[in-house]
Image (cartoon, rainbow, N blue to C red; front, side):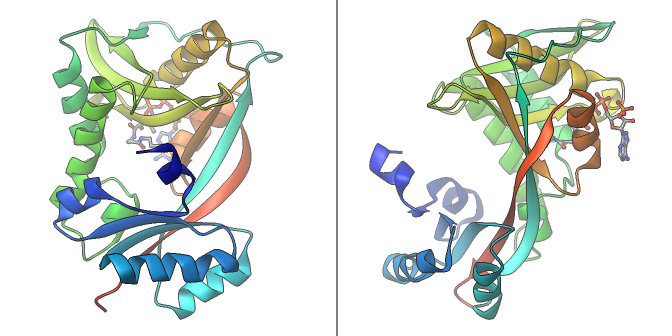
Amino acid sequence: MTEAEKTRIVTLSPLDEERFGIKSARATINTAADFPEVLEFCRAEGVVFLIARCPTGNSETVHLMEQNGFKLMDTLVYYDRDLTNTPLPPVPNNITVGTLRAGEEREVEKVAAKAFQNFVGHYHTDPRLDKRKADEVYSSWAMRCCASRKVAEVVIIAKYDGKIVGFYALKLTPDRVVEGVLAGVDPSAQGLKVGRALITGGLEWGLAAGAPGMSIATQLINTKMQRVLLNLRFEPVASFYTFHKWFDE
Ligand SMILES: CC(C)(COP(=O)(O)OP(=O)(O)OC[C@H]1O[C@@H](n2cnc3c(N)ncnc32)[C@H](O)[C@@H]1OP(=O)(O)O)[C@@H](O)C(=O)NCCC(=O)NCCS
C-alpha cells in the first residue's frame, strides 16, 4: 500500500477480493461528511462488498449507514497501556516466550487455523461469507505476519512443554507505539495464561524497542481477551463498529 493509499478513507481490498472472489473495499467513515466519497468510490470501482469502520460515538454517521443498508457485523474495543511508568508483570511459569525463528512459520499457521476456527469476527458474522474461507483469513494472515515485515514487525511465540502453542504478531506505529496485529492460542492451551504470556512478551519487546506504550484492539464479544488485557493494566480508550455493505442487494 502506498503512503497516499494509507491516508485515503476508502481503498480497494485485493486480499478480501482474492479470498472471497468478490470485488472488495475497506473504508473508515469518521464523519457523515466522509460518506459520499466512500459511496462514489465504490460505485466508480464496481465494488460489491465493502467493510466499513465507524467510531461508535458518531450516531449521525451510524444512522446514515443503517439507512443505506450497511449491516453491523462486530464492534472493536481499543485498549492502551503505558510502558514507561507502569512496571511489567513477569511471564507466567511453565511458559516461555521468544520471537519467531526460521522454520517455525508452519506451526504458527497451524495454531492460527485452530484458534480462529468459528471465531466470532466480522467475516464469520456475515451470512453471505463462506465460513471456511472466513476461518482461512486468519491462518493466511498469520503466515503473512511471519513472512513480511510490512505486515508485522515481529511475531512473539509462546511455548508450553517446548511446543508452540501461541503467537502474537506486532507492529510499531509511526509514533513507535506497539500495536497488536494478530494473536492466537491453540484451543488445547487456552486458559493456561498463554495469552497473558504473549502480551507480556509483547510489552517486553516494546520496552526494548523504546516504545512508549502498547495498543490492542479486540472484539467487544471477546471477553477472554479483554480479561487478559484488564489484568495486565490495559485501559479501554476507543471503540469502532464494523459494518458490511453489499452493493448488489
Ligand atoms: C483470546 C486468547 C488469545 C486468550 O489466550 P488464553 O491463553 O486463552 O488467555 P489466558 O489463559 O492468559 O487468560 C484467559 C482469561 O480469560 C478467562 N476466560 C476463560 N474462559 C472465558 C470465557 N468463556 N469467558 C470469559 N473469560 C474467560 C480466564 O479466566 C482468564 O482470565 P483470568 O486471568 O482473569 O483468569 C485465546 O483465547 C485465543 O486465541 N482465542 C481465539 C482467537 C482470539 O480471540 N484472538 C484474539 C483476537 S483479538
